[in-house]
Amino acid sequence: MKVTLICVGKLKEKYLTQGVEEYVKRLSRYCNLEIIELADEKTPDNASDVMEEIIKKKEGERILKALKEESYCIALAIEGAMLSSEELATKIDTLGVSGTSHISLIIGGSLGLSDEVLKRSDYKLSFSKMTFPHQLMRMILLEQIYRAYRIISNQPYHK
Image 1 (cartoon, helix red, strand yellow):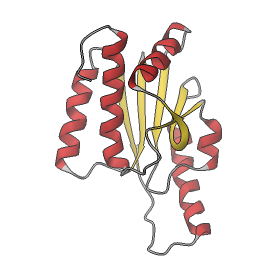
Image 2 (cartoon, rainbow, N blue to C red):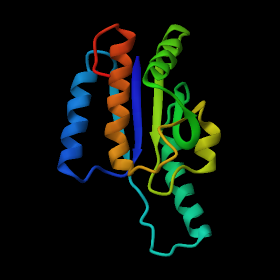
Image 3 (tube, rainbow, N blue to C red):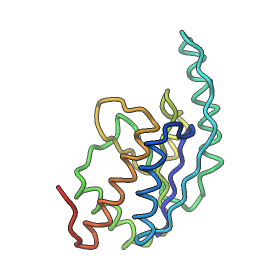
């Protein structure tokens, strides 16, 4: 299966880059992983609601351009479904068994995802009602994908 992470913003912290690299290496035995980093828009302090929507729309246009038509799209969104690690593994496994060969997971910028991206998504996934930095979320998501593949393969992984 091909798994694409589409992420708004670049990793800046060395510890996050190292963590992501580790999970990329681990995942290489389970899937064909691609990470696409898209430029984020600078958000001015005290930006109006209108300005924030414009920023999300610009980032959303970049996301939609990067998204392949045939890809099953999972958007990370606070209003999405919250799954256990086992349920995420089942979701990924079921997609593969039903013929899906490409899954794209989208992490938006600091303001979240545009309505257009949310409408295009096939599934909305939430990790929590809390907000996480989008750079940290990349490593958390990769860890959970790795955990899912370990569960699917009936291989041990700490709980």
